[in-house]
Image 1 (cartoon, one colour):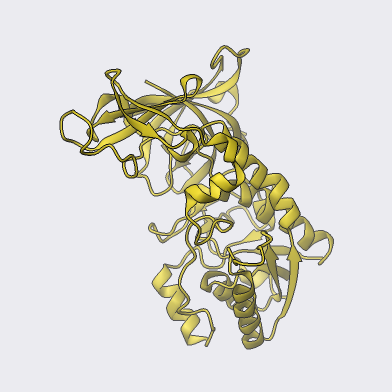
Image 2 (cartoon, rainbow, N blue to C red; image 1 turned 135 degrees about the horizontal axis):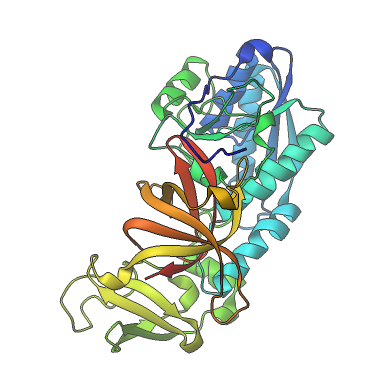
Length: 396
């Protein structure tokens, strides 16, 4: 099925009339988005069960994810709505499937995105499997700001669509969940803006209506990021030289894993190094020499790439076949970045002397700054999030 040959027009309104009486398990985090999702599904006549997921084991002195407080808020919401709340501990699954990858990537000098892997392995795998196999669900639902298509009916292959609130759209983080999942997923607040969600939650007397949004990576919480990394990877934090693109040593870094491509703050070389007087940016990492490469100015050519190599491609419906390539679409190389026009090819390529393997070659219409290996490139056709892949290297 050639789904990449043209743009699609989707109907993204949930067909509640056909879902009345169906059992939906809502991932209730203790935040306002999932709280309102549960309320809207109950109002639509569905049988609603809430599931609170604990994905990280806090220590005895700090509550990184504020799990106890979040569960208390979830309980208050369920009491208001008159729905059952269940709790499941996915901490072991999270450690094995998400956190171990997080550590491995940082050890290799890359910059992973654990939220993407959490959605793939926990929320749309472990949670989904538990809801269907143990709780006998017909659907699961989350408070993500994105949509799924319903054109062709409830059983037609579902596409992932951007959320209506451009400032909150989370399709970037869900691109890797893989095919065949969205048919059993509902996103009740994907067609709303955040202010509207808060207003509707307040109207319904939900305890989370004014609760502050959580930010950052849950297992780090209020800890300083560098300290957290050092605690888990003490042997990977070896200081080394910071070298300009001209080959001059301009400072010392505390460890390559603490730095990411495009980083400007925290380099501590602003006034101590000679140069143009402009801010310094990280443009590369020389792992073999434990050196951080920097350049001055946000328009420095070394900061930009003409494209990128990516691997581990995933697609929401069907991946493009060879005769559908090259694919013209848009992409994002990080969350909140404006879409960039690009061309996608699939080729055999070798990186760092390894054997050639099938990779995606993504060529931008215009140069893009700060391509960070370990992050994800995500592909779009208008509102349709097609899928994505893990960035391996920029193409200069």
